Image 1 (tube, rainbow over the protein chains, first blue to last red):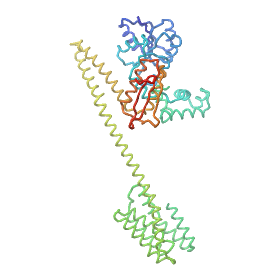
Image 2 (image 1 turned 90 degrees about the horizontal axis):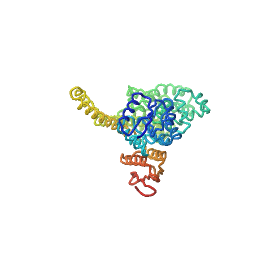
Image 3 (image 1 turned 30 degrees about the vertical axis):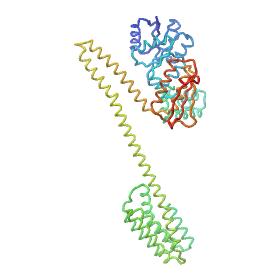
Image 4 (image 1 turned 180 degrees about the vertical axis):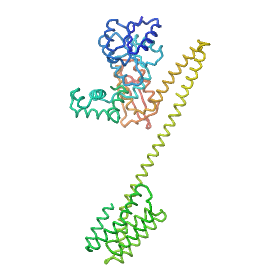
Length: 201
Length: 305
């Protein structure tokens, strides 16, 4: 029997996933959560074989939770559910030792089969996600450029960003200018949009 | 240029030391015709026909001729501006003969007004002055024309691309959506009388929706022309992140920005396979240029696979 933990913040989708997996004779859902910061504690308590995690969760995003889960409970294999709008997350998922990466609108049988294969030690990645990730390219931003863009996304002025990141305002402007140029944007708002859509932030 | 012409004219007047009268007459006559010639030059540079061009040409001819009579030798080089005006205003079949005629007239004018005549030199200088105005004017006009043509071609290319995309979408996603709508309507009609058939029809609708969605994504992706080098770098990055040792070997010369879909499909299939299989060995992804086209080979530990 494969024990499964499900983390999905939308009630209806979470309910549908639990109902679908309940139809599988070789699977049992041992925990269902709606927040990313509850995943590790629940996993340590229930010891599931596979954790099915949505990529966008309140509290802690799915990939960060997957990283922590791999560190604290490496025997629990993680499968991430994502949309095709953020192909850049595939790289981050692979670095976080995520074993499965499938799109949310895949057929129900694909999810069940994917859980079985991940439990068997295989890596399951939707070919469309691979193609989208190759076409999007890995992030052209440095770590600091991504930090500055994330800070700018919250609407902070350059001086506040500088204070938050312990940089000078001139350095922040340089990082923003480089980021805008690298992603081919017109301004910082455009750069944030492009980077967010590509999964680079 | 025109300001330069005024300055040269004034300088020449003062150099020849013809007196205050000639200088004042020069200023007056220049003020009469230079704005007209300036307007004609500006129009030509902007690919427009000057309004009342022939009237201005006639007026310019009168003013310059008056100058020759009143001022004499120092004024004869302004005939260059008359040549400029003629070449801009007159229709092509008349412009060149008229310009040549005016240039030829410089010889007898020089003999008449110049105390030390040198007709050939006068013609050369007048021709050079006219050329100094005409050449940049025509160059500016030609550049504008090139720019306008380029914009027109770009607009046509965009329009052609939009038509192509519309045709592709209509033929693929559009057809799928029509089928989905028809099947869903049929399923709705059967829901009360034949629920089992309605359920099967709905399953087919769901299936068709997924296929249409995947097709739409593939089409949209195909419109994003990512350079080959970006895909290759990303492939190696993804494989390395997944724990698959991979190395990229590129040709000495630059890769083409965009290549045929088959090569990209091969790269994607290879990355997909290696991510799934997670082989313990190292891989080399090599790109070779063959007859100007890139060729992809994937080898494992030096052995082609």
